[in-house]
Length: 138
Image (tube, helix red, strand yellow):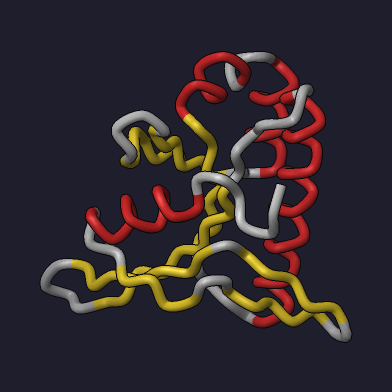
């Protein structure tokens, strides 16, 4: 898979359609001498308060022969990005974007559920057919 996952543009467009402004593509996270790159950084203005809500989204396609292997890699990236955010004092919320088909087929299994709960992983479920965002899971 290339540096940008297969469905990168579809998720990017879906975020824009939901009112998000893409601020970085990719978002560079410096952690000492190490540079990490989260797929997308976005913000939007919330209601009357005019506060800025910031998120970062790591997009995964889950195209490997083993969804578990893809999940291992995705969780590792997610946790490192969270460390980088804390290191830099950032408060943006991080989401792991997964295809609807994979979410339905895999994410009800104990390994996935326990990992998501234990590590506080936020999920953005996206559609690959008729591209768009299906669900935000906090």
